Length: 155
Length: 155
Length: 83
Length: 83
Image (tube, rainbow over all chains, first blue to last red; front, top):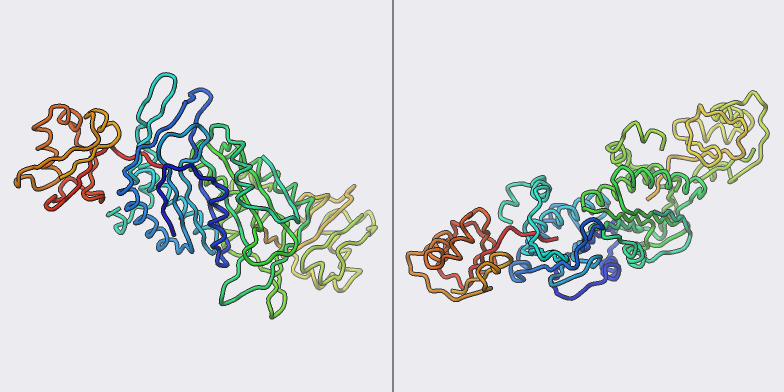
């Protein structure tokens, strides 16, 4: 398993292929790619992610260990970019490998749900009207809450 | 959206990148890749998928329309290979694009759950001991059943 | 009318397809299964457990009570194991 | 002791980090917030709603009642919006 926190752009497909190359007879792989969103009715110029890298690596490492154990994953990888990006660029990618699809899907969803609320990144959206810090979404808290168990209280 | 049923090998990462290139300001993309499984304690030599292509295209087209509408996806693609493959080779890939991750994940899981039971492919596993047709898994039926609604009775 | 067979059904019958001309009294998929079983013992054995046999008429998945009037291709196969 | 600030907290304070030397009576993260607020009105205003402020001690996310004895780096930041 691996965690990468970087200002470098990454190639989603190349990352998936590198991840799949480590396949050990596993049957199911899930890749989630989070891209800079821009809606036609509310376009943004750029998205800047601020990061506290030392804390991000610690948080994501605990999280990935938890996901590996909880869903009996064969492998898992988190790549999270920070800095300034334009619409369509990949921000984050989570990949899981498991013997069956249910575990691969659940592991990837678990990682994304925790990452949204527990990884030290902050989003600043820039549009022609100016820059605003993105507020946390209530449904991100509820998405995280569904996995809640005493074992995870420390994350 | 697109459906591809083919005997040709495909490149999972290249397919994901081609799919993401159609991104229209969407925020979330999920790729599920199903690979030929081979466990160390029960290794297989090859897996052969038999297919009824005309029916496969009809079934997968109905399924993808249903997923697009039900989860308000921006795009969805199913690639399903048939013929003879070796362990680690990709068999199937499902990709979804949505404004938010919950819809992208749900759409991909829905497509996979139906595909397992409702797409006309049959798996023949070959090992040193001979060849056996893979029996349907009970948990594939229950995975499919969780999406069951009158609207889907016809699939 | 063309009949297609897949997977272990194809193997047990030792053919992937055949042309048949059932009489007009053969109105549904179920009737066709009965009629084919009546003329071929291997088929009768292979489809003994009807719940294991799926069918398609002109490349549409259908239940066994579906009429076959005007159909060009009827396919029979075991439960699917895709993905 | 080094203090780090992120996101709108950093912007409102107009600095990303600073060195401070709190007295021994400052025992926990909460004490540190109070002590920093006492010496800097901008900080006091920015952290007025304490529930909006998250903290980390030596790159570990911690609740506000965590002791800071021996800590080298304490970070303050708004709720995270990763992913």
